[in-house]
Image 1 (cartoon, rainbow, N blue to C red):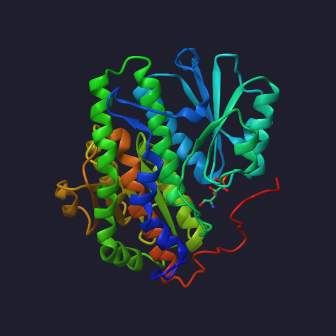
Image 2 (cartoon, helix red, strand yellow):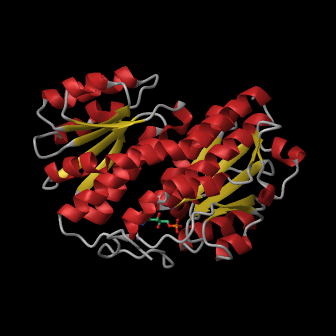
Length: 365
Ligand code: M6R
């Protein structure tokens, strides 16, 4: 039940510290500095033989897969490709016996994702499911996998299942990293960082008043642009999807540097740009992009790391998240974007939990 929350979506956003603890529970081995994912049904030898990973999903799960590509390649250096599930089934993606495919799906029933899995298995590619619904079709038909244990998600907009899928991607990165070049000391440090994430999310959730005020200020925008780099590029896409889906404001997510290749033509006073610009190796690059937007009279909303107060010289609308390693950043930066879309939708009087034209689970093509 919703309890004290006016909508399931808000309740589910607030469940994230706990849903992430559940996604990690029993899966971190401090002794070996690695992840334990027994449901993959693969021996260390088989895992070591994997030389290519394919990740597939739709909508939010596709964005989690994009973060997965970044995290797995960063931590494990195993070439990883994301194929949107609806395209995978109609393409002939190169794969061989050393390729491992993962399909990501909250419901485990999305027809395109299911079809991508069936197509992969028909070709003899091993396919594992990253699923929330226990006993769903993908969970039953896959060669194994990993439940995300996020608990029921009722709101049509996926929130806690995104962060839990990203968490599993990180555990996979760690697992593959540890059978290649990461040391056990690296692994142990990662475990400390992972275990700190739930409390960091809880601290972001104390800032709802500020995020609500920013949302209300921009609620009549004609459209919104979302920009990020590296693992925060998929977060930009996810922020834009949430905004479209529940507030019906047209929004799109881009790599920040694409601005000058076309997107900047859209910048104007009623088209805010949301920058995901944490304190990382590309912070200064994001700041130049922010300045380009401001110079064209586009309002800017920033999500950045605590301490980066210099952004307040550029815009009033700065939202802070705690510091963390850059490969974990999406787990924190997406939270303000979920809240931004939520409060925008509420301000616009939209039916947050049941947006028009959408179903929770898309079982037709
Ligand atoms: O159940 P699935 O994870 O397979 O669903 C995939 C998409 O339909 C889903 O993520 C959709 O994009 C959400 N409504 C986004 O909030």
